[in-house]
Amino acid sequence: MIQKIGKKVIGLVLLVLALIVYVIQQIPRESAVNMSAVNAKLQEQPVQEPYGSVYEVFVYSYEDTDGDGIGDLNGITEKLDYIHDLGFRGLWLMPVCPSPTYHKYDVADYMSIDPQYGTMEDFQRLVQEAHSRDMKVILDLVLNHTSVQHPWFTKAAEYMRSLPAGQEPDPAVCPYAEYYRFSRNMQGGYAKLEDSDWYYEARFWEGMPDLNLDNEAVRKEIAEIMKFWIDKGTDGFRLDAVTSYYTGNHEKNIQFLSWVKKTAVSFNPDCYIVCEGWENRNTYAQYYASGVDSMFDFSFADVSGVITSTLLGRYKARDFGNAQESEWQLYQSYGSQAVNAPFYTNHDMGRSAGYYAADDGSKTKLAQAMNLLMSGNVFLYYGEEIGMKGAGKDENKRAPMYWTQDPDAEGMTQGPPGMDEVAMKFAPLDEQLKDPYSIVNYVKEVMRIRNAFPVIACGRTWVHQDLTTDSVCMIMKEDGVHEPAAIIYNISDQVQTVDLSSTEFHALRGVLTVNEDAVTFSNDILTLPAWGCAVLTEQE
Image 1 (cartoon, rainbow, N blue to C red):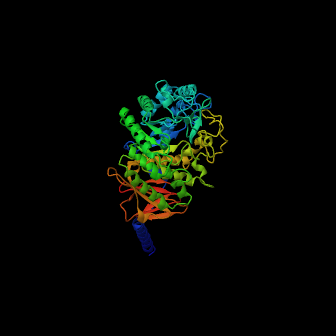
Image 2 (cartoon, rainbow, N blue to C red):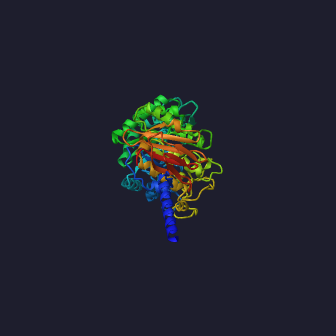
Image 3 (cartoon, rainbow, N blue to C red):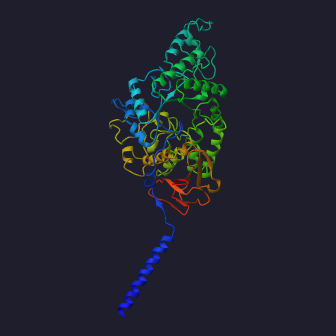
């Protein structure tokens, strides 16, 4: 009798266990995933040029290899692996030509390397090493003005001082007098030429005399300058202050840019041109009519831009998405060759870590995803990948790269003369590299995702309005070549869920989280932790 009862109990237990297994199999499996586990499966895919990614470097403050406290070109070469490992496939060098100032935007010789930075051989080695890593090199080219120490200006100034009262300059005697704009009358934007009765145009500063870009001899000089650097291996140019070439005259600026682009591609058909036009979006969008590749996207940048405004609550998540969709349509109206150049900060702006009071790093991180996952050729300013600080005067915005806490460590630079002491908010690079949830490792994950899905860079941008809310933004990317992708942002400090059953996106491919909190995806229900982000495609 006891044996029979025992057999019945065992049978009942087995039956219960079988039922439990069956029930478990029928319950939708919770797919909780962390960032590294999902993203580790991704493989980089080739992207159509010039839809890439570029790392901006102020050479002066980056890496010092000769012990003088000033960064140099060899320092950039030493850090190419670091930049490549971040995920960037292009390098923008701020001006490297000889100049009397630390920032070097007043060029004294367009065809040399400033001795503070090294030699032409150092530059060519940098280009060669970059190319060996499939990285492009873009040079800052300043065409609006020169230094007062440039031979063109010194010769022109000497001649103008020698002219007797009432005598006009004769270009046959001194052609350089027509390289600039001189006047006997003081007017807005002009500076006094010392020891003379003449004035010269200098809109930015008296040490930066404006070039006369209508002068054919000046244009010939510019053509020779571009050819010189292209022959040295330079892949493109960042053009400074393009809306200032002809003050207040956008039409002439655009015409001149058209000439620059045509001239550059005559030397290298793939020469990339990206332009700084610090204006509102509707204004700088007009410059795509020149045929240049890219205009920097100022509407999303800086403390007043769309990204920061969204994270500070001035805009909603849907506003962030709608701004991307509307500008994509705007730029495309000037032709399919228009390639947006998204960026979040640059050397003229306060660093982004200072935008968010009491931020533990969450907003600083998500802001990088919001920038780096935009369509176009995206840019990141050195030090933003570790959340450096710096605001106020320009020197503070160009502080030494925060490699380590020890300012006297090998490779550390002293920073620009007159820079204030800048107290950093987050840890230096060497410490962040040890933390899987640091800002730098977050940026690496963002770039891993971007590089794995070319459609993110190249795709038409539109917003899934039905699933986009005040807190959640769902941005769609499609280009007709690659598999479409959806980027879903949780722009809030609360967990958010998104039901994707009505869409074609059923494969979770990329995840970005600001901490250890996991993303879950089950039965087409996506759950994003605070400040989380996910990338989905139709298939695995």
